[in-house]
Image 1 (tube, helix red, strand yellow):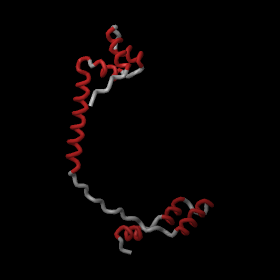
Image 2 (cartoon, rainbow, N blue to C red):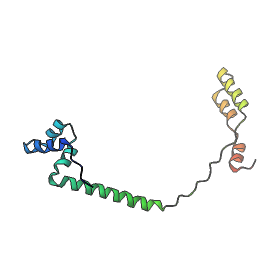
Image 3 (cartoon, rainbow, N blue to C red):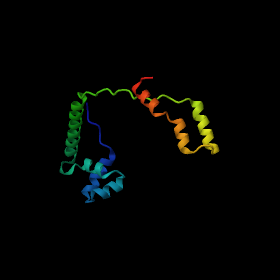
Image 4 (spheres, rainbow, N blue to C red):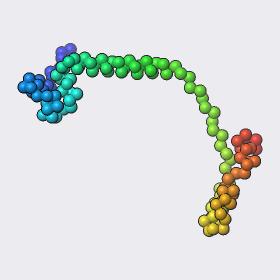
Length: 126
């Protein structure tokens, strides 16, 4: 398999660097990021450093995934639900509250199950 030819802007970057332009100016002229310019120029081993960072990152992810793939996840018990109150009585209470016949405390008393029914719904003993 043969190597691909580098894009034309690579040679332009090298030429601009040879003229003495800084990386930021080259990036502005060729409309590329400074990271890409540094990669093309490969000054101070930028390419190899990037490869090593990527390799280390992959290794860290792999070791993390390997450690946590064996963790056992305990199944959760299903949530216990309260028994529903008759929707007609809830609507009646809401209408009475809207008309001003009852106050908020009375509304809550009518639409909330009483303590005994709540307790029995939680324990399942109805």
